[in-house]
Image (cartoon, rainbow, N blue to C red):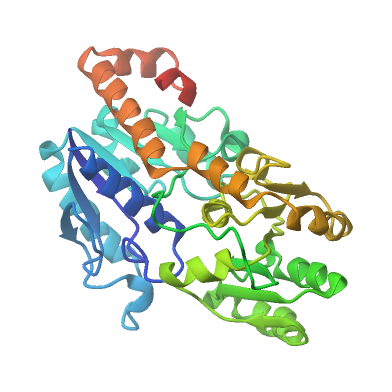
Length: 365
């Protein structure tokens, strides 16, 4: 198949540092190329890929100090995609709903993976107005606020099996927090858990401009006395950071759509202690790859059990459920089914008769 992958422009593909969506796009793109598909990636010019690359910004927008407004760059990218649309069998978008007006006429050959939260009230009118656009959720939990939208699959993220090597004999003796510093990620909970247990905590995290005040006012005063702030780390540094950790703390307080860091930790053999929000119960197999709690007190009590978990079993569960090969296979099944339906005219009929049709991932296999 000839497949276009349209990525966000804020980070490169793959990202140099933090960037969950761009990392997923990279993993999917590389696996599709490995499977023999003809893939073109629309992304920033500093992206690295084995697919054909169409540069839509010289460098990732977040890393370019001259960029003030990202929207013009996205408009230019969408125009390039539109001009080349006839060259592809499938157009796979990862930029939320920005493309809906321009590509409505090609709805049957588009797939839009939603990577963010869907519980904000401003989003619902978009899905009602563009109900013919096929959507993919990255967890079942992500669908809940907009369950009547035109979801055609739920496909969990995946990582290459050789990306992060497991460590079955960690020596670090610390708990880890990795991701983004923000109120909904609750690094303060991670600090409270570690401090209560007298265990070191290492925080490797990105700070967005919008969260700078939160960091300075709420988190920075808590750093020290066993709590170490490292800052952003790259893919290579994750191997040691996650692999040497006793466990990953994922103390979120928001409807997490997926949580890529959870499977990154599992790939390293590191068990996950996560709060029951959003996708967490779908990703963490309790007692096998981690523990799920609802309060700080429960988290404190669960850490000794977390430390005793079989790290080989954690890694095995990652291999069974969250490989990039499995993810790409799920998407290929979806692409092919959509093209069959499109060629047979079934998509137009389905849209006319039942615009909110939902097809679960299991139906694709």
